[in-house]
Image (cartoon, rainbow, N blue to C red; front, side):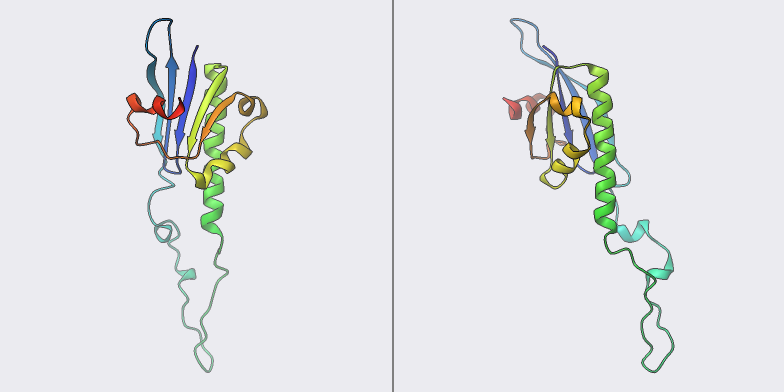
Length: 146
């Protein structure tokens, strides 16, 4: 029986196909892998306009000027990344046609990914681990789902 394992965090995405023939050990093949450029780097490098730098204004004490700083921008970027990851998972699970699949996602984004999955894809989810396995060797990844 074929299974798919998805290991993700905000910066990395790896999808493996696990095939097992009778009287053989499982074969694990990497079918999708990418690093998200959006998740890397400092937020200040991504938002580089000078309007958020609190220039000193006029007035008696030189009051600081704020230009409507986006206070929740990191949270919004995290939600957007989780939605994109969910879309990629939906596409892979549908393409592979596997009856079961496993998910390993960090605790920080696990529930957000699950919220954005299609109902049919979510129904096929067999095991969900709240752990970042993106740097785990492919030979060892199956041990986490046994």
